[in-house]
Image 1 (cartoon, rainbow, N blue to C red):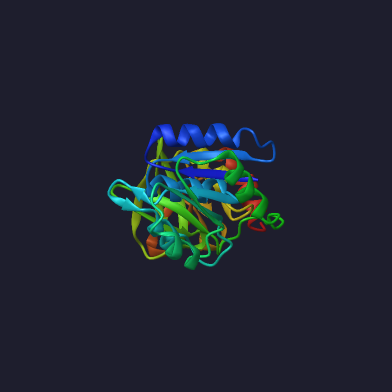
Image 2: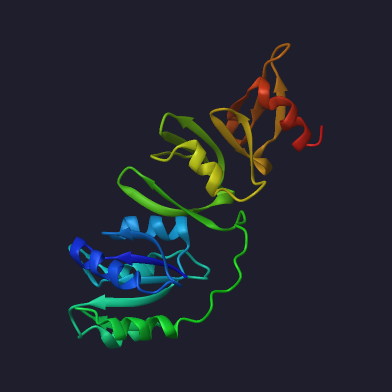
Length: 235
């Protein structure tokens, strides 16, 4: 059972981590102190259960639920708060439980017992969303809308289907790990290209090639990737 803790207070996260460590069936996926990080960790780790504080400084834990990608499955939610006045709203959101701080070990164990077994995991597809944080904005983007990913150090540039570009603080190797299997082809040590976005391979010289994408975009093809690329594209 993968668990995510979302709380803006480090001591509260530490205490909940300690209590969860007493349950061997629980694996702590990550912690987050704000909604942006919580959504990013949710997209990356796909937790089964989220322990979610309601008051997150200038943010609200209920906004986390509103910003989760659709369609489900979404993680189950246990609200953890010092205030009891939000209990009705929490259960209207189909929360699994509502715990008051300080959390008692017996109540935590009861919450964990309520969680049904997670459904069998399935591989990601092009329709699935990926969390993208670019500058001051953050959103979920379906994999199918990303035509290419170009590396620049620890940053990458996303070339989207609508012609826009986003600069993201995420290295190319992490995109390789996150992307649906077979969805992207690596054409260069610094470039991933969505298979279905490739319009043609252009030969510009004896050993120089480029991939043509929509909106007139061209992506280089490295020599060491050319043979595998041709084979993947059927010739």
